[in-house]
Image (cartoon, rainbow over all chains, first blue to last red; front, top):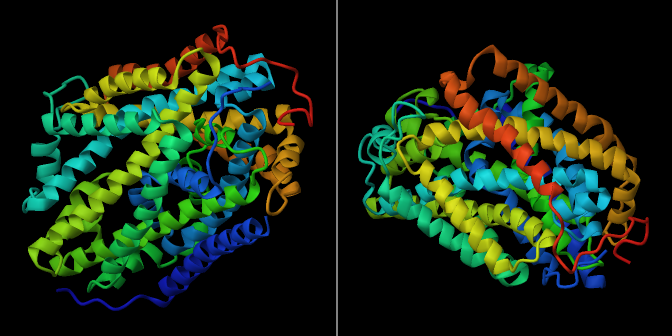
Length: 40
Length: 509
């Protein structure tokens, strides 16, 4: 096996950026929908 | 202006699972990850996220609002806007009709590979297996090169599924299927991604996917690529979302449903990127070769690079096979939920206009689509689908998106879109939609279209003979518009449809 290092700091930052914006955004919109549906 | 016997979604969740199922397809697995890889790695996420908020979400709101307010598929909705616009609806629904022919064949490839996974039939050289023994790729688009029977058998299964799901209608067919397919796909994708991330070498692959090259952000081409990715990935401008929204109950959310659909699709994009690059990273490290050697483009990722990686996984052969079955089953169900939406787009258009039963129109589309798919199940299939896909995407979908944004933005009006969207939504939208629909999206799609056109005349696409480019490319692209114009001139025979003048506040009241 070739030598490789772990994830580079820039890649880690973009991974967190993607996870927070996409999954955080999705979770927010779903929770808004669930709250509104409960109110109905 | 009413269709008296219109089916309805049984629940909001069922609608969302179906729209997400329509948007998430085969392209999520291989288009987004390599878009990022080629356009600045992690830095691509910035224009991608910007495009998501300024094109994906506003256009989704626009289509949901339009279809829901008009209570019709693309054809009826545009016809209600004005008889002269009806052709746009037909033109939109022509695209999925053509795409379904080759899309169903690619789903059939996934089904074949699902079976191959049991024995890892691709052997030690998946590249030679895919192009040679499996596809039997011929010398060019005019050399049919014989029939591929295993692919044809897969096509039969795909069209039977398409037929049996859609013939039962929206709530009894599509909603029921997507309530199973979409959550199942999410669970399978999470399992595949976790396995990928825990492989030695995963970090090496992820660096290629996510390491940012911020200099690329200054390149306008990267922004165009991000807009193209968001636009094509969300199944916009092909009548699917307008048709699906037309079956929503009267007091339905539009704005938040759009956000959830677009963000879910992008979450699948990102998850697929993590899965694909971590597994390819492992394959590169385990074979001691640079990443570029294992990275394939387009369908090659799924049918060449992945089988190779599956056979190298550090686990007993039976678990390798199970992993392969899971991956190709994911591809298969992602494809099915998209293909049924394409079938429904045209079916809704035809059901709105003609006095015909759902079962009859679904039967006719399925038989026609099946025959079309059979041409792709030949040795020339891969050439044919490549040419047709290029022209349908560049001069069908992109141009339709531009026309739709202009007509709905300026003729129908963004005020009507917003007014209707805000009626029962969880939260409201404002000026941002006007700016995105009227100015930004037409600018980006117009630029994309002109750029494609210029490139087209520089050299024949992918070096194919000009005869094939004209017969399979331009003829299909222009033919869709001609057929749409013809169909829009035909009389309406559905007795449940009557046209009144569109009056603000009168529609859907």
